[in-house]
Length: 297
Image (cartoon, rainbow, N blue to C red; front, side):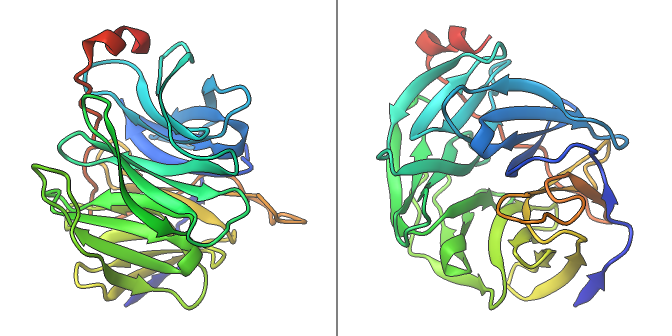
């Protein structure tokens, strides 16, 4: 195992309450501030400021993924799923959760389906679920009984789904049929005695990068679940990870100031470090519903 505590640099001056959902899209870093319902971007070639892209009034914004068909996003927001236009207008696709819960993290598989998880606002154990949104915008509950769903991320061929069950301190691994999108029985990929696994990303070597909330770490795991690299951060609550930049070899790390009194300097900022192994292009949602495509321009 290799440990690094140098060369992690602060990328943004601004700090967010609950920065999450980092994505590399159109040569820029995109991220959300969940509880404020805000979507931001920032440059990936040098440290820079955050630029607002959209804000949902009265709804949290858990995660977005870009549309393969053009501008706009599919979004895990509020208690359900929506299509978010470049103008910031949200068109609801499905309401999925009770008012005591909200949507959390999400992302696409290589085929172009969107997977998004939910959680209880108060963190009630086993109240979270994982949903799959198909290109025709049909929504399917795939897994329930989870606690604070984060990730998901997929192996390069789409045959393995990785999922952080953050409330239980574990990362789960599911076989997935890439054609049908149906997951098989889960296995425990890794368990964490300290901190909670949060956002995930897979690099070009099929290693899994994990933000460890509460431990101030980002970890890289080998495909067999053994620990490979530990990055130490100067802030305690990393939330998501994304490989981007001009060569996809810059690891961006979102963090949170939520619940920290006082918050250590830099909590809620984006941090970054250059790595020897690049990532993969961000998977996009393969929208196949012409009746709704006009709402995303």
